[in-house]
Amino acid sequence: MANIKNKKIGSDPNFRYSSAMSNFNGVWNRKNLVMYLKDPSKYIKGTIMPNQNLSNNDIDEIVNLLLN
Image 1 (spheres, rainbow, N blue to C red):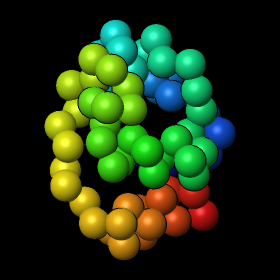
Image 2 (cartoon, rainbow, N blue to C red):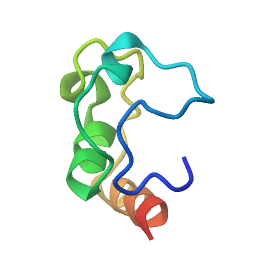
Image 3 (cartoon, rainbow, N blue to C red):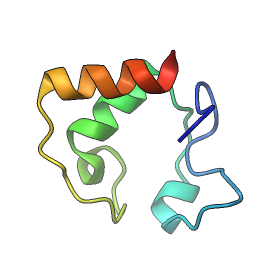
Image 4 (cartoon, rainbow, N blue to C red):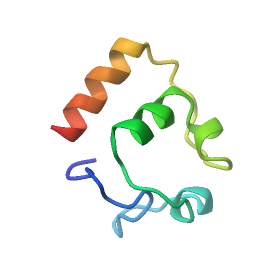
């Protein structure tokens, strides 16, 4: 997930996405990443990404890593 800041969600041509991800209208920013990592299937209905039960601290660290 390198270079995803402000990139359209589900748009990497080298990855096979669910139709829910590829049809989702949004970009990867702090708000969207936090919401997705908290509960992927709640944020993007129909995605196949399972919930990872990450702590808020883990989510903050992942988002900071991906966006900085």
